[in-house]
Image (tube, rainbow, N blue to C red; front, side, top):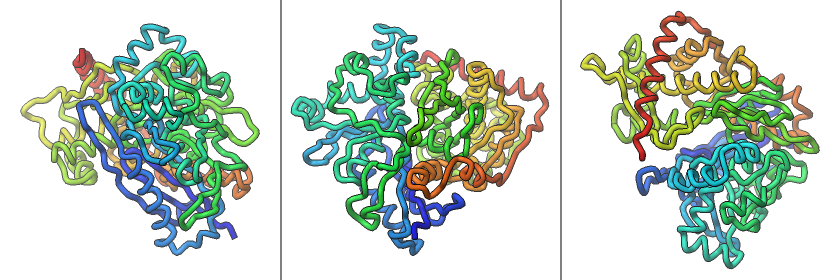
Length: 497
């Protein structure tokens, strides 16, 4: 009897495998942290072979630790860090270069050139995106130009490109080279209207079409192929979703106007816009939210923040300011406010709604009064300030004012941050009972494909609230804090010529 659906959740800082029951509750989980590599300032890389090894390890460990038989698993869905770029050799299966992570900024000059030559509006009309270091296409073009092994393999027809989902699918299934529209729409190579790779955009970046994966729906009964080896051998991979779209799906945001914010390595606010790809004039992204079997694509507006939870990790690992995220949260709670200190984490420039690659991180407002606790509080508050800027841009683009914000991700463990977020937004912040919404969304998509769940109403019924925070801050205090934040942002700009 098929009692569970699996979700392989490959994120920026860890790889996890979870099994969910029919009520959408996690019944097994295994996790492994992923090492980060910073070979030069602004460069961020991952070991794609390690990602694959970790994926196989956590899949096996989750089953073994929970004592669940492989025959009880009906399907597997994959969700992944999205824009991270992998190129591998089709003949050997080996990565040809370290993966270029979505945070990597080495393509800044190329992106500026693409905007200068073709205009921002053309890119946004075709792809919903601006030319920015965030996205995969320029990263792939950089590898073709600067990596000898990648260039040689491309000339000889041996190279295969993909975001991390495609890399995992290719390996787990024994050679299926495929991705879904949610991941494809993060490359600057995918046309939102045709829902296909755009030949003109490929030509602009000098990318051969045969490097790219086949496009399949986010959820598909035909699947991406069965897993070829290991304890889950024969179980079909039936879904692939970029991590933030998966979280939107896992939060049951199925109707236009429903939104969620994920507080993970970065911070990602998505609003469902239904079957309409709403163009943004306020610095947001237009992206594919999902494509279910036999249905048209659904779209979303997205605001992306590069550094949220990763700022906490940086304070722990690089500054040794604290020994753990819990210690940072506890210290932040020992002071009544930030003491006038603001931390703008523009380590990779500023993403939405600013899109300033020349920005760099600053700590502003320091006085002799400020101490370690104030710095800790400023680090937490940075995620909330950035989210408020996204919410304001989203309301301007969509014409819809949020009535509440569903939240998920590791930073939701901080009640201090969640209350501050509600105070800044002036609306309730709602945490679901199942906080593993990214993995849950991938499981839902896979389970729908094989009939484990019958439809979206059943998934919506699974959503339950675990906690809520309601605004309690005076408007004058809120306005003063936001003015201080904008001053700090202004001082972060222009550092990189």
